[in-house]
Length: 163
Length: 260
Image 1 (cartoon, rainbow over the protein chains, first blue to last red):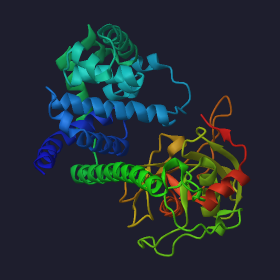
Image 2: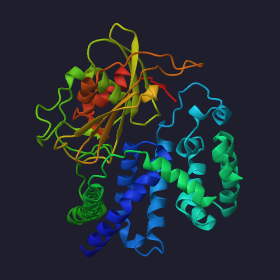
Image 3: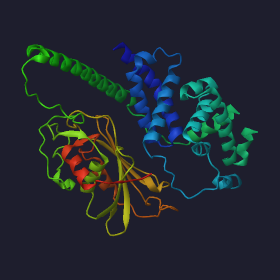
Image 4: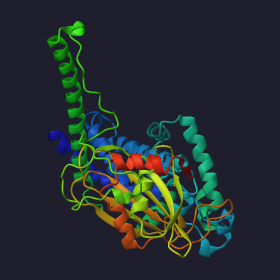
């Protein structure tokens, strides 16, 4: 029962952050809620091992992101049905400018996860590689590619960030 | 750059209105304990079965004992072992839902659900109209599609089921939510039923049809929100379904197209 209390204490503290990460990945609060629920349940089932982790939050993020990537593989929830959008048009029309979340949505799921972990969660390249189970070189190259993609779609005033 | 990028993301998030976090932790604890119990029971059951076979073999004089007629092994897809009373195959009207969703009376035999059985059940739950374009997301994916034409042209409905396999009759009542996504014509309205055992049934009402190669032709939603609530709240949805529905699905939809 002590382990359950430990888990509950950690989960209470981490749930909001996990759900926010999930939302940034999927842009759907209900799905984010479901993914967080799934991740917490899996974390509970492996709690004995999880509590030995150096960084428990990163461990939980890893479970969450894998749940999301599994979800994407399993279901066709990613159907894009809008007409073709000429991304660069956003740069010249202030009324149409994308938010950063919109821009992230233009990246594929793994690249989005890399940007979120690197620049929102402030993980090191090595930590991102561990969470996503990819080589460090892939994280570096995909980060460069993702930032270039964000540059393409963001408005000019936002581009100053990438100068 | 990191701080500025993070700041932009924080600004975007601050503009959001997320739903309440709810009792995520309590549900995770409850579901986790339930899964653990099930795993222990499965392990215990397996051990007991092996011990039982060994004991019986010993009692019968080992492998050279008198020949006996044993019961056939249960189909590994069978989850609940209630006496099957197969209804005639056909439409889902032959498979009446339990009168009281909250009741836990033993139900018909449950087997692993199939997309084809989902199509039979969905057809039976839809209001009067002409159905067409049955499709599934994958060979065993519990996600299906039907068009329903109620006189105003076809409207598209997609239903999916997710959750752990259950081993007995469904109990309790589902929490049903309906959300609108006006900027997503494929999921313009999404109705979800969440059952206490972790099962989620989702119906997506579209305001366009599947892509015809060039575009998604616009259309009217096939159901009202209230009708969608009734569809997702039916207790017969599950990762296991009545054996009769599964048989009817195989007969009614021997070949089903895939949607992407």
